[in-house]
Image (cartoon, rainbow, N blue to C red; front, side, top):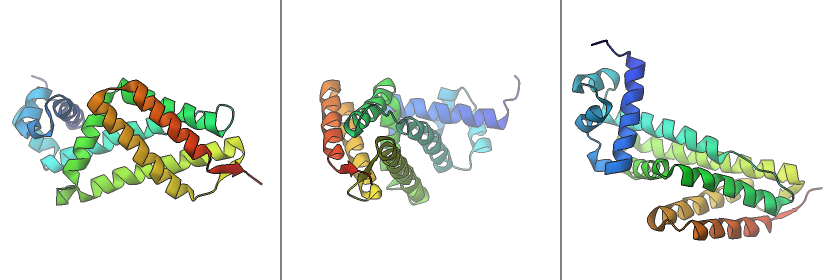
Length: 198
């Protein structure tokens, strides 16, 4: 059997961990189960990762990078209200397209909060979310020639809280109409915090 390069094996193990957590829950993601899912010998895990925590940190970083990229898509369409609605709708499409990613990230965040070795993983995750939200709001404000009446960092935190809450509720009830309505209503409220620049 041909030897699999370490970088490729790492990728296989990360993808396998993602599938196991997404389909069976976090508790099922033992090193033995992840290796079985990847079709790799158990020894390969210890060759690629120093610990399970390192694997989880890598999994979080890769999954988060994809999500941050998706959240960063700004849709300028008419005025600030329409642009906020379009941007949030665009974000929502990514949630519905890959709900498993959201479930896995939420599971990893909760786990990281209780693991000292992963303490900085959740902090980095939310720092990236807040930064992306702030940049999104600033881009919309510039494109629509408005300024925010509250600090962008404060609005960014509100945006992350709302999108997290709507996403979690949808993962439970799968009520897409309610999710989109909530995001539209929030966009309308947020637009009320914008005034003409100048």
